[in-house]
Image (tube, rainbow, N blue to C red):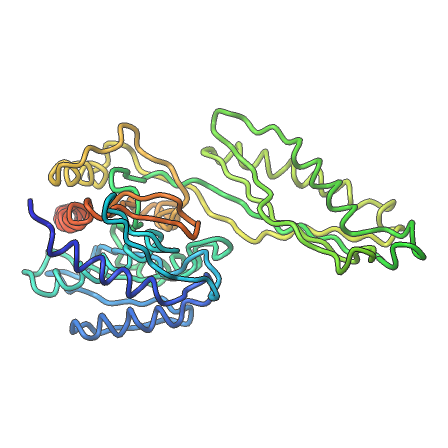
Length: 379
């Protein structure tokens, strides 16, 4: 198969998207660009208050519909240098967010043009560029999209830029907390002995690091952010950390949550309150779990689609935390697929392999067609 023309076009389109800053919570500029691109293709386009972008490739029936989604946000601040570098020798393209998820959004636009020019599929296909997948976005864009489409939605395909050989159909549950400490603070010399928010928080964090999650089912935790204080010679009046908990099993996750709450509770006693210390734990992320079986028709269609483009599927199906968590948690069949290979995700030297792009596009196209046909038969 010769995919050279499509590959070049997708690379150019991906770079255009990547050059528009889109940190989580500030996706409006990129969303407008995507909406304008869909309008140029002739679609009626709507956006919601979150800056999700919606367009529909009309099929022969409106229900059950298929949703194809790609998230527009990145982990990088708006001030990040977005310079792109080509490595021709290794056929790689480097740039912050190029794989996660600029090429995913570009693939959504490519599919929009293909569906516009092709015969109508058996069912409506909703094309959604959604916000809030990364970090503390907490999948808010996908939550809103599924809320909006759920009355007609029969299945979903989520596009991520990297991981062409993987098929994610199990949703990894996650709970995230912001743990905050306030204390009287003061001058490091004259007020020595007054409670310090940082001293309290690091004691609490030390207890968190002693957690021992089970290896099976796989369960993890991570303190990803810790901050506070005002100067080296100030007793800190405020400190904060962010904690991420994940598990393959909801019961194991609940057990970890219980242990964290017990640790926090030990710092909410009268002893600490009398010292002027206040400790709070606020949920800042709650990604629900769910999944479909290995032999579900949508999973089997994704496997056939990879074989059709001469890509060997990963031997074991993947569990991950993606936008697919939301439909899966609501009993709506969904898979998350990739367009190419890549690496260094969430780093400024993030890269994608350019050679597999054409195969990834046709994997997306054929899976879309097969999923639409399956939905028609399921009606």
